[in-house]
Length: 420
Image (tube, rainbow, N blue to C red; front, side, top):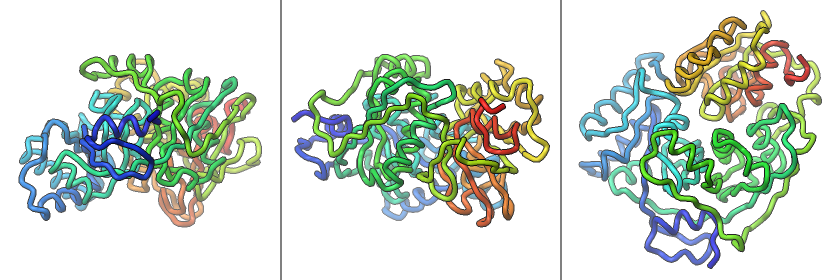
């Protein structure tokens, strides 16, 4: 049977013959992930089910990225539980302090996930790794505990929506805009428990960091996974980012059967913004009018990579953040931070009047380092803009690319770079 990318990846990890979508299959996993919020819950379940040892101490990753540096006693205790479990189980990939970064940037960067892998994580944005050809998805902490103990889990084989993106990419358009365009087209439940498989000339030319950004937000369309074929660009990325061995080239079969095909043309497409309070409320920047903001956040597992830092610096160089705006820049890993320092990007941000902070999820989930007060608005390069997501229930979050976020920081109102 010709297979979609989702079917092919699951088939390589199960003894069951995949014959149709919706089939339940038991699969081996290559990596199990949890963080400082979800890890302690998984550890509690692990102990509750009587498990004594993780299935493989090299295939568990615990990343202390959400509330760290620890903002209060509760978050410090969360990290302590995870730290003690990592020591007890001799877990190799435990990240805290100066080694820690935002998990979904950190794992691909460290070569811990790659093409052909099946990855489960106690975080909904685990689907990020589909950008490098892995079947990766979020699960609840109890399922993660079982995966830690057994090294396997079950999946219902998802039907696949094929997304073909064609056309000529305008100067100020980025991967974030492509994903917002798709979510605005199909809705936040348009791919519910389905695989989004991306292709087309624009995708073929898209840098791997852009693919990771798009896969990250597959869950914002309800998808189980967001998948990109592993091609020569993927292989080069993995070779440059500590991935051991020869990364396989993986793609769907040419005559694979899809539940639906969505065709998008981005020629002449202007930058997009997701308006409150749902990621599908997408509008072109020019349609927004005079929307004043008090905060801009550039970072997160969606747009905190070095290419995002470069985009933000491109707009901010030689300019100043508006006095009415606090602009927070959070490179997503120590490697990104170091590279941004080496390239002079951090100096550009500071000269512009930005706050440059540590590698943390922080404000994305309304945790710390950028909380919104009553009536405040923010433009963020994050992935969710639900009511109260970044602080007060009376605040508003707009989602955009680093280019639009940086332009907004300068203008004080939501703006595209070409308006500066």
